[in-house]
Length: 424
Ligand code: C2O
Ligand code: CU
Ligand code: CU
View 1 (cartoon, helix red, strand yellow):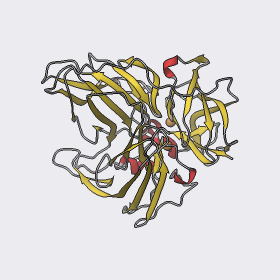
View 2 (tube, rainbow, N blue to C red):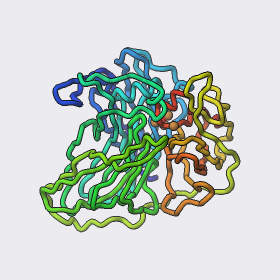
View 3 (tube, rainbow, N blue to C red):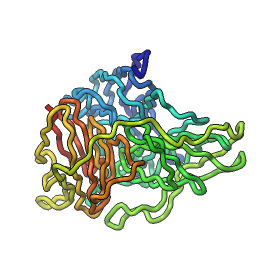
View 4 (cartoon, rainbow, N blue to C red):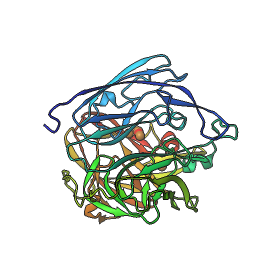
């Protein structure tokens, strides 16, 4: 219906070791899909079927999870539904792309190590309602923690686990301070994803405003303007901006200060990328859209249950808990296929946790009992639970299976902050 001519998009994907020069004069041995960090950008249209012929050429087992893509349960790449793919083995992932949007993929075993080493790639799915733009760019926000010789620093202490690993080298599209070339006066569409283990990005382009037109699950009905765009690990944003300046001007995309907990947040703004205004045809006449395509609003209502996220020491070990338990001891939530549920996600910790749900989008209804503004109507798969606050969400569980939810600070996932939802 939405795509009269669905195609089959076939991709060969190999996870293997590769060399990358993050720092001048050094090489880092990365783990990379098809040898590049970020991995490939898979392009498709909504309704297309994606077939990924995957080969694991790493010395360790792995899987692929398609973050945000609504897939059949057995394609979700998590341990509960898939035997990890052993070194030298292959696996074919196949699913139909049901939603236009910008997604990413990454392993779902040993995530903190494997993602940090470079295993992530992108999927851009176009739909029938794409806004016009003169230039399209991608910004993959991340970081790595490197020793002077370029090798990965894999030390892990409680401080690292507490906030999630933040690298000492901050990257956009796998590079330090890359240039993003835009046209003067033209409309630039920027798709943003945060692939970092623990770092939050609070984006700003001084003198400019982002018009947010979409997020995790695609375009939103009510675009809005913001000067700061806070992006937690796992989240995506789709923004339009008009670069203002003479040809030859260079602007700096900044990461602004943000305190995400335990008073260890970013205190100083940090430059991320150079936005270069090149020669161009000038004003294209394209304007910022005031509205976006409608999406179905899920019914609201009071929360039927509260799920509480916290941190603490269990048997002397720093642990991140859901209702006081750590994975795999978090009791599964049982729901019926097709049913709609409202939950209060309560963060009792003194730090933000980005909540992520597999398999389904959810909509944010309220924060601390205050209904959210209309512009927040969006299909999300990852949302920040700010420290000491409650976020109310609603989801329709329309696909059977065993689905994970977890904090997307990967060191927290690893230390217990993950649970299962059984849809029958
Ligand atoms: Cu990107 Cu289970 O997550
Ligand atoms: Cu996911
Ligand atoms: Cu967390």
